[in-house]
Amino acid sequence: MRMTNDMIDGIYNYCDGWCERCSFLQRCPVGLDIAATTDVQQEIHSEVFWQNLNEDFTEIETILKEEAEKQGFSFEMSEQEWQEYKRSQEQVRKETQESALMKTCKTYAFTVNDWQKKMHPFLENETEEVMQMFNLGLTLEKGVLDRMQAIKENLEVILWYSFFISAKFHRALQGKTEDDGWERANGYQRDFDGSAKIALIGAERSLEAWAQLTQLLPDILDEVLPLMAKLQKIIQMGDAEFPEARQFIRPGFDE
Image (cartoon, rainbow, N blue to C red; front, side):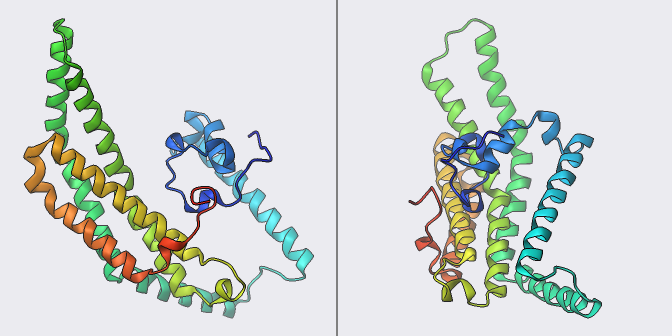
């Protein structure tokens, strides 16, 4: 990985993870690391993937231990401390999972997943008709190709963010539950507000993609209106739960 002095510290904490579309790729250490890996290295079922992951965790563990020794403390827990920690984390997990916001996010994500499976044959037919015209040597109007590309791009946005919204709100809710006030007291932005902000951004981008898709495919409007309404509800609930999230300044993106 080639590092430069232009790296933006922490930019990867509050992004949408869509590295191939990111204009800050060359200034993000995580993005550059991903870009430098091969397809085999990124394949979760490959031995190389797990070997690289193990090496990364080992390196991080070593750095943390060295830093802890410098500061004069240890990461080692007594059995009592470990049990108390597990109980605390279980309570946080339970509160997060049972929140109305998380339930709505999960419902939306799985409904989108079911919808795209059902829509797959329909979209294949649309594409096949265009390809048949092309193979027959028929001249395709530019508008036809543009429409197919727009359908593809909006679907990619919808599918990319469907589970992402849930994951980021989960992180935000968990962080809010665990917040002890230290960040604000010491002049820092609250991390959970940053997670909530990118979740809200993902929800709004998804809503816009749905709106464009219904213009391209009017027949799906009645079917996807409930999904769009669900997104509106997620945005409203997110704003209510994290009223300061939109003021969070994400490194790179909002500076």
